[in-house]
Amino acid sequence: MTTGTGRLDYFGIDPLLSEDERLTRDTVGRVVDREVIPRIGRAWLAGEFPRDLVQRLGALRLFGANLPQEYGCAGMSNIAYGLIMQELERGDSGVRSFASVQGALVMYPIFAYGSEEQRRAWLPAMAAGEKIGCFGLTEPNAGSDPGAMQTRARRVSGGWALDGTKMWITSGSIADVALVWAKAEDGVVRGFLVDPRTPGFSAHDIHTKASMRASVTSELVLENVRVREEDALPGAVGLGKALSCLTQARYGIAWGAVGAATACYEEALAYARERIAFGRPIAATQIIQERLVNMLSEITTAQLLAYHLGRLKDAGTMRYTQVSMAKRNNVRMALRVAREARTILGGYGITLEYHAMRHAANLESVDTYEGTYDVHTLILGRDITGIDAFGAPES
Image (cartoon, rainbow, N blue to C red; front, side):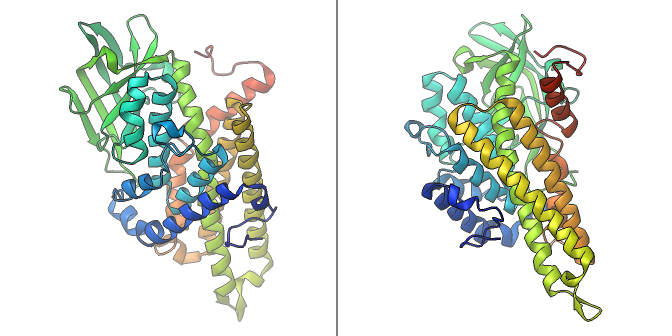
Protein backbone atom coordinates (compact mmCIF):
# COMPACT_ATOMS: atom_id res chain seq x y z
CA MET A 1 0.00 0.00 0.00
CA THR A 2 2.86 2.39 0.76
CA THR A 3 6.40 2.81 -0.50
CA GLY A 4 9.49 2.47 1.62
CA THR A 5 9.21 6.17 2.40
CA GLY A 6 5.64 5.75 3.60
CA ARG A 7 4.01 7.24 0.48
CA LEU A 8 0.60 5.92 -0.52
CA ASP A 9 1.17 3.71 -3.57
CA TYR A 10 -1.35 0.89 -3.84
CA PHE A 11 -0.70 0.16 -7.53
CA GLY A 12 3.09 0.28 -7.51
CA ILE A 13 3.72 3.56 -9.33
CA ASP A 14 6.87 4.29 -7.34
CA PRO A 15 9.12 1.85 -9.27
CA LEU A 16 8.07 3.58 -12.51
CA LEU A 17 9.58 6.86 -11.33
CA SER A 18 13.17 7.76 -12.02
CA GLU A 19 15.61 8.11 -9.15
CA ASP A 20 15.60 11.90 -9.61
CA GLU A 21 11.80 12.00 -9.54
CA ARG A 22 11.66 10.01 -6.30
CA LEU A 23 14.38 12.16 -4.77
CA THR A 24 12.52 15.32 -5.72
CA ARG A 25 9.26 14.07 -4.22
CA ASP A 26 10.87 12.93 -0.99
CA THR A 27 12.88 16.13 -0.57
CA VAL A 28 9.82 18.32 -1.01
CA GLY A 29 7.82 15.96 1.20
CA ARG A 30 10.29 16.41 4.06
CA VAL A 31 10.11 20.19 3.71
CA VAL A 32 6.31 20.03 3.82
CA ASP A 33 6.34 17.72 6.84
CA ARG A 34 8.75 19.95 8.78
CA GLU A 35 7.94 23.46 7.64
CA VAL A 36 4.34 23.53 6.38
CA ILE A 37 2.12 21.03 8.16
CA PRO A 38 3.03 21.94 11.78
CA ARG A 39 1.94 25.56 11.34
CA ILE A 40 -0.38 25.76 8.37
CA GLY A 41 -3.56 25.38 10.44
CA ARG A 42 -2.72 28.48 12.45
CA ALA A 43 -1.74 30.41 9.33
CA TRP A 44 -4.97 29.35 7.61
CA LEU A 45 -7.05 30.47 10.60
CA ALA A 46 -5.24 33.81 10.72
CA GLY A 47 -5.59 34.29 6.97
CA GLU A 48 -1.83 34.60 6.53
CA PHE A 49 0.36 33.29 3.74
CA PRO A 50 3.63 31.80 5.12
CA ARG A 51 5.76 34.09 2.99
CA ASP A 52 9.06 32.91 4.47
CA LEU A 53 8.52 29.68 2.54
CA VAL A 54 9.04 31.47 -0.77
CA GLN A 55 12.82 31.74 -0.58
CA ARG A 56 13.03 28.32 1.09
CA LEU A 57 11.26 26.73 -1.87
CA GLY A 58 13.18 28.94 -4.26
CA ALA A 59 16.48 27.71 -2.84
CA LEU A 60 15.40 24.23 -3.94
CA ARG A 61 14.48 25.58 -7.40
CA LEU A 62 10.90 24.37 -7.09
CA PHE A 63 9.39 27.31 -8.98
CA GLY A 64 9.14 26.65 -12.70
CA ALA A 65 11.06 23.44 -12.03
CA ASN A 66 10.27 22.04 -15.50
CA LEU A 67 11.77 25.05 -17.30
CA PRO A 68 15.33 25.01 -18.70
CA GLN A 69 18.41 25.28 -16.51
CA GLU A 70 19.86 28.03 -18.71
CA TYR A 71 17.34 30.41 -17.11
CA GLY A 72 18.16 29.41 -13.55
CA CYS A 73 15.42 26.77 -13.36
CA ALA A 74 15.81 23.13 -12.38
CA GLY A 75 15.13 21.58 -15.81
CA MET A 76 13.21 18.70 -14.24
CA SER A 77 10.82 16.33 -15.95
CA ASN A 78 7.12 17.12 -15.92
CA ILE A 79 6.61 14.09 -13.67
CA ALA A 80 9.01 15.60 -11.12
CA TYR A 81 7.20 18.93 -11.42
CA GLY A 82 3.88 17.18 -10.81
CA LEU A 83 5.26 15.44 -7.74
CA ILE A 84 6.37 18.83 -6.38
CA MET A 85 2.81 20.10 -6.75
CA GLN A 86 1.48 16.92 -5.11
CA GLU A 87 3.68 17.34 -2.05
CA LEU A 88 3.04 21.07 -1.69
CA GLU A 89 -0.72 20.55 -1.77
CA ARG A 90 -0.40 17.72 0.71
CA GLY A 91 0.56 20.61 2.96
CA ASP A 92 -1.98 23.16 1.76
CA SER A 93 -3.66 24.21 -1.47
CA GLY A 94 -2.56 27.79 -0.87
CA VAL A 95 1.11 26.84 -0.87
CA ARG A 96 0.71 24.82 -4.07
CA SER A 97 -1.34 27.61 -5.62
CA PHE A 98 1.48 30.09 -5.02
CA ALA A 99 3.94 27.75 -6.73
CA SER A 100 1.52 27.11 -9.61
CA VAL A 101 1.03 30.80 -10.28
CA GLN A 102 4.72 31.56 -9.96
CA GLY A 103 5.85 28.77 -12.28
CA ALA A 104 3.00 27.90 -14.63
CA LEU A 105 1.18 31.21 -14.99
CA VAL A 106 4.00 33.74 -14.89
CA MET A 107 7.35 32.04 -15.54
CA TYR A 108 5.98 29.77 -18.26
CA PRO A 109 4.53 32.56 -20.44
CA ILE A 110 7.68 34.65 -19.98
CA PHE A 111 9.65 31.63 -21.20
CA ALA A 112 7.25 30.69 -23.99
CA TYR A 113 6.17 34.12 -25.23
CA GLY A 114 8.70 36.58 -23.85
CA SER A 115 11.78 38.10 -25.41
CA GLU A 116 15.21 36.81 -24.52
CA GLU A 117 15.77 39.97 -22.51
CA GLN A 118 12.57 39.35 -20.54
CA ARG A 119 13.58 35.75 -19.88
CA ARG A 120 16.98 36.77 -18.55
CA ALA A 121 15.52 39.59 -16.48
CA TRP A 122 12.81 37.60 -14.72
CA LEU A 123 13.21 33.82 -14.80
CA PRO A 124 16.35 33.36 -12.67
CA ALA A 125 15.07 35.70 -9.96
CA MET A 126 11.63 34.09 -9.93
CA ALA A 127 13.07 30.58 -9.86
CA ALA A 128 15.07 31.57 -6.76
CA GLY A 129 12.01 33.08 -5.07
CA GLU A 130 13.65 36.51 -5.12
CA LYS A 131 10.85 37.95 -7.25
CA ILE A 132 7.13 37.11 -7.10
CA GLY A 133 4.67 37.19 -9.97
CA CYS A 134 0.90 37.23 -10.34
CA PHE A 135 -1.33 36.43 -13.33
CA GLY A 136 -4.12 38.85 -14.20
CA LEU A 137 -6.69 37.21 -16.46
CA THR A 138 -9.91 36.69 -14.47
CA GLU A 139 -12.23 39.68 -14.07
CA PRO A 140 -15.27 40.36 -11.87
CA ASN A 141 -17.59 39.53 -14.78
CA ALA A 142 -15.30 37.37 -16.92
CA GLY A 143 -14.25 34.19 -15.17
CA SER A 144 -15.29 31.17 -17.18
CA ASP A 145 -15.56 33.38 -20.28
CA PRO A 146 -12.20 35.17 -20.50
CA GLY A 147 -12.94 36.27 -24.05
CA ALA A 148 -15.46 38.70 -22.55
CA MET A 149 -12.76 40.60 -20.65
CA GLN A 150 -13.25 44.32 -20.28
CA THR A 151 -9.65 45.31 -19.52
CA ARG A 152 -8.40 47.39 -22.42
CA ALA A 153 -4.99 48.19 -23.85
CA ARG A 154 -4.56 51.19 -26.11
CA ARG A 155 -1.42 52.29 -27.87
CA VAL A 156 0.25 55.44 -26.60
CA SER A 157 3.62 57.03 -27.27
CA GLY A 158 6.32 54.53 -26.31
CA GLY A 159 4.01 51.70 -25.38
CA TRP A 160 0.55 50.99 -24.00
CA ALA A 161 -2.02 52.25 -21.49
CA LEU A 162 -4.07 49.68 -19.58
CA ASP A 163 -7.47 50.17 -17.94
CA GLY A 164 -9.54 47.53 -16.16
CA THR A 165 -10.04 45.33 -13.13
CA LYS A 166 -8.81 41.81 -12.40
CA MET A 167 -10.31 39.63 -9.67
CA TRP A 168 -9.28 36.59 -7.59
CA ILE A 169 -5.60 37.14 -8.30
CA THR A 170 -3.25 34.93 -6.28
CA SER A 171 -0.23 36.87 -4.92
CA GLY A 172 -1.69 40.10 -6.31
CA SER A 173 -0.60 42.42 -3.50
CA ILE A 174 2.84 40.86 -2.93
CA ALA A 175 3.90 40.56 -6.57
CA ASP A 176 6.95 42.23 -8.06
CA VAL A 177 5.45 41.82 -11.53
CA ALA A 178 1.89 41.33 -12.77
CA LEU A 179 1.30 39.54 -16.06
CA VAL A 180 -1.86 41.32 -17.17
CA TRP A 181 -3.98 40.27 -20.14
CA ALA A 182 -5.89 43.02 -21.91
CA LYS A 183 -7.83 43.44 -25.14
CA ALA A 184 -6.21 45.83 -27.58
CA GLU A 185 -8.06 48.23 -29.88
CA ASP A 186 -8.04 45.63 -32.66
CA GLY A 187 -9.86 43.18 -30.35
CA VAL A 188 -6.82 40.94 -29.89
CA VAL A 189 -5.88 39.89 -26.35
CA ARG A 190 -2.27 40.62 -25.41
CA GLY A 191 -0.07 39.94 -22.39
CA PHE A 192 1.91 42.65 -20.57
CA LEU A 193 4.45 42.65 -17.75
CA VAL A 194 3.32 45.39 -15.38
CA ASP A 195 5.35 46.88 -12.54
CA PRO A 196 2.94 47.18 -9.55
CA ARG A 197 4.66 50.45 -8.60
CA THR A 198 3.42 52.09 -11.79
CA PRO A 199 1.03 55.00 -11.17
CA GLY A 200 -2.58 53.92 -11.57
CA PHE A 201 -1.95 50.31 -10.45
CA SER A 202 -3.39 49.16 -7.13
CA ALA A 203 -3.99 45.80 -5.44
CA HIS A 204 -6.62 45.17 -2.78
CA ASP A 205 -6.62 41.95 -0.78
CA ILE A 206 -9.81 39.95 -0.28
CA HIS A 207 -10.13 39.19 3.45
CA THR A 208 -13.56 37.56 3.59
CA LYS A 209 -12.57 34.16 2.20
CA ALA A 210 -13.72 30.94 3.87
CA SER A 211 -11.35 29.01 1.59
CA MET A 212 -7.67 29.29 0.59
CA ARG A 213 -7.09 31.43 3.65
CA ALA A 214 -3.34 30.75 3.75
CA SER A 215 -3.04 32.41 0.35
CA VAL A 216 -2.95 36.02 -0.81
CA THR A 217 -5.93 36.74 -3.08
CA SER A 218 -6.40 40.21 -4.51
CA GLU A 219 -8.31 42.52 -6.80
CA LEU A 220 -6.12 44.45 -9.24
CA VAL A 221 -7.24 47.85 -10.48
CA LEU A 222 -5.53 49.49 -13.48
CA GLU A 223 -6.30 53.11 -14.25
CA ASN A 224 -4.36 54.45 -17.22
CA VAL A 225 -1.37 52.30 -16.29
CA ARG A 226 1.48 52.95 -18.71
CA VAL A 227 3.50 49.97 -19.96
CA ARG A 228 6.60 50.28 -22.11
CA GLU A 229 6.63 48.54 -25.47
CA GLU A 230 9.51 46.36 -24.27
CA ASP A 231 7.30 45.09 -21.41
CA ALA A 232 4.71 43.62 -23.76
CA LEU A 233 5.32 39.90 -24.25
CA PRO A 234 6.01 39.74 -28.01
CA GLY A 235 4.57 36.25 -28.42
CA ALA A 236 1.58 36.70 -26.09
CA VAL A 237 -0.86 37.69 -28.80
CA GLY A 238 -4.31 36.08 -28.86
CA LEU A 239 -6.51 34.59 -26.16
CA GLY A 240 -5.17 31.15 -26.99
CA LYS A 241 -1.81 32.13 -25.51
CA ALA A 242 -3.45 33.02 -22.20
CA LEU A 243 -5.37 29.75 -22.23
CA SER A 244 -2.17 27.80 -22.88
CA CYS A 245 -0.87 29.11 -19.56
CA LEU A 246 -3.98 27.75 -17.87
CA THR A 247 -3.22 24.34 -19.38
CA GLN A 248 0.17 24.40 -17.64
CA ALA A 249 -1.41 25.33 -14.31
CA ARG A 250 -4.21 22.79 -14.63
CA TYR A 251 -1.60 20.09 -15.17
CA GLY A 252 -0.04 20.91 -11.80
CA ILE A 253 -3.43 21.09 -10.13
CA ALA A 254 -4.24 17.54 -11.27
CA TRP A 255 -1.19 16.37 -9.31
CA GLY A 256 -1.73 18.70 -6.38
CA ALA A 257 -5.25 17.41 -5.75
CA VAL A 258 -3.79 13.93 -5.23
CA GLY A 259 -1.65 15.34 -2.44
CA ALA A 260 -4.59 16.92 -0.64
CA ALA A 261 -6.65 13.74 -0.98
CA THR A 262 -3.78 11.58 0.28
CA ALA A 263 -3.35 13.77 3.37
CA CYS A 264 -7.05 13.41 4.18
CA TYR A 265 -7.14 9.66 3.56
CA GLU A 266 -4.08 8.91 5.68
CA GLU A 267 -5.41 11.05 8.52
CA ALA A 268 -8.80 9.30 8.42
CA LEU A 269 -7.20 5.83 8.26
CA ALA A 270 -4.97 6.51 11.27
CA TYR A 271 -7.90 7.92 13.25
CA ALA A 272 -10.17 4.99 12.37
CA ARG A 273 -7.58 2.51 13.61
CA GLU A 274 -7.20 4.30 16.94
CA ARG A 275 -10.70 5.57 17.69
CA ILE A 276 -12.51 3.14 19.99
CA ALA A 277 -16.30 3.05 19.91
CA PHE A 278 -18.45 0.32 21.43
CA GLY A 279 -15.35 -1.54 22.53
CA ARG A 280 -13.48 -1.73 19.22
CA PRO A 281 -11.75 0.53 16.66
CA ILE A 282 -14.19 2.11 14.26
CA ALA A 283 -11.96 0.70 11.48
CA ALA A 284 -13.43 -2.69 12.40
CA THR A 285 -16.87 -1.64 11.18
CA GLN A 286 -18.02 -2.42 7.67
CA ILE A 287 -19.21 1.10 6.92
CA ILE A 288 -15.84 2.67 7.78
CA GLN A 289 -13.95 0.06 5.80
CA GLU A 290 -16.16 0.69 2.79
CA ARG A 291 -15.51 4.42 3.03
CA LEU A 292 -11.76 3.92 3.29
CA VAL A 293 -11.72 1.51 0.35
CA ASN A 294 -13.69 3.94 -1.80
CA MET A 295 -11.29 6.75 -0.87
CA LEU A 296 -8.26 4.62 -1.68
CA SER A 297 -9.74 3.51 -5.00
CA GLU A 298 -10.43 7.07 -6.08
CA ILE A 299 -6.98 8.30 -5.06
CA THR A 300 -5.29 5.42 -6.88
CA THR A 301 -7.25 6.15 -10.05
CA ALA A 302 -6.23 9.81 -9.83
CA GLN A 303 -2.57 8.87 -9.27
CA LEU A 304 -2.55 6.73 -12.39
CA LEU A 305 -4.25 9.47 -14.40
CA ALA A 306 -1.72 12.09 -13.26
CA TYR A 307 1.24 9.79 -13.85
CA HIS A 308 0.26 8.93 -17.41
CA LEU A 309 -0.60 12.55 -18.16
CA GLY A 310 2.91 13.46 -17.04
CA ARG A 311 4.44 10.88 -19.34
CA LEU A 312 2.38 12.29 -22.24
CA LYS A 313 3.55 15.80 -21.38
CA ASP A 314 7.18 14.70 -21.25
CA ALA A 315 6.72 13.03 -24.64
CA GLY A 316 5.19 16.19 -26.10
CA THR A 317 1.93 14.46 -26.99
CA MET A 318 -0.34 15.77 -24.20
CA ARG A 319 -3.55 17.47 -25.34
CA TYR A 320 -5.27 20.23 -23.39
CA THR A 321 -8.47 18.19 -23.29
CA GLN A 322 -6.60 15.44 -21.44
CA VAL A 323 -5.52 18.04 -18.89
CA SER A 324 -9.17 19.07 -18.54
CA MET A 325 -10.13 15.48 -17.77
CA ALA A 326 -7.39 15.13 -15.16
CA LYS A 327 -8.17 18.46 -13.47
CA ARG A 328 -11.91 17.77 -13.49
CA ASN A 329 -11.58 14.24 -12.17
CA ASN A 330 -8.82 14.68 -9.62
CA VAL A 331 -10.03 17.84 -7.93
CA ARG A 332 -13.60 16.60 -7.57
CA MET A 333 -12.17 13.30 -6.28
CA ALA A 334 -10.10 15.15 -3.67
CA LEU A 335 -13.11 17.15 -2.56
CA ARG A 336 -15.12 13.94 -2.03
CA VAL A 337 -12.25 12.32 -0.15
CA ALA A 338 -11.79 15.37 2.10
CA ARG A 339 -15.49 15.42 2.95
CA GLU A 340 -15.50 11.68 3.65
CA ALA A 341 -12.42 12.01 5.85
CA ARG A 342 -14.13 14.79 7.80
CA THR A 343 -17.06 12.45 8.39
CA ILE A 344 -14.83 9.64 9.68
CA LEU A 345 -13.08 12.05 12.04
CA GLY A 346 -16.41 12.98 13.61
CA GLY A 347 -16.39 16.11 15.74
CA TYR A 348 -12.61 16.34 15.61
CA GLY A 349 -12.88 16.73 11.85
CA ILE A 350 -14.06 20.32 12.16
CA THR A 351 -10.96 21.38 14.11
CA LEU A 352 -7.73 22.67 12.63
CA GLU A 353 -5.68 20.23 14.69
CA TYR A 354 -6.77 17.87 11.93
CA HIS A 355 -6.49 18.70 8.25
CA ALA A 356 -9.57 17.38 6.45
CA MET A 357 -11.81 20.41 7.02
CA ARG A 358 -9.12 22.83 5.86
CA HIS A 359 -8.42 20.77 2.76
CA ALA A 360 -12.13 20.45 2.02
CA ALA A 361 -12.61 24.22 2.29
CA ASN A 362 -9.57 24.90 0.09
CA LEU A 363 -10.66 22.39 -2.52
CA GLU A 364 -13.93 24.24 -3.00
CA SER A 365 -11.78 26.98 -4.56
CA VAL A 366 -9.57 24.58 -6.49
CA ASP A 367 -12.72 22.97 -7.92
CA THR A 368 -13.76 26.42 -9.17
CA TYR A 369 -10.61 28.10 -10.42
CA GLU A 370 -8.60 27.27 -13.55
CA GLY A 371 -11.89 26.18 -15.14
CA THR A 372 -14.84 24.94 -13.13
CA TYR A 373 -15.92 21.30 -13.13
CA ASP A 374 -18.74 22.21 -15.51
CA VAL A 375 -16.49 24.16 -17.89
CA HIS A 376 -14.16 21.17 -18.17
CA THR A 377 -17.20 18.98 -18.75
CA LEU A 378 -18.09 21.13 -21.75
CA ILE A 379 -14.50 21.17 -23.01
CA LEU A 380 -14.51 17.37 -22.99
CA GLY A 381 -18.02 17.21 -24.40
CA ARG A 382 -17.00 19.36 -27.35
CA ASP A 383 -13.95 17.16 -27.92
CA ILE A 384 -15.83 13.87 -28.01
CA THR A 385 -18.95 15.04 -29.89
CA GLY A 386 -17.54 17.76 -32.13
CA ILE A 387 -20.37 20.02 -30.99
CA ASP A 388 -19.72 23.24 -29.06
CA ALA A 389 -22.15 23.62 -26.16
CA PHE A 390 -20.60 26.87 -24.89
CA GLY A 391 -22.87 28.90 -27.16
CA ALA A 392 -20.03 30.67 -28.96
CA PRO A 393 -17.04 29.57 -31.04
CA GLU A 394 -13.77 29.11 -29.19
CA SER A 395 -11.44 32.10 -29.49
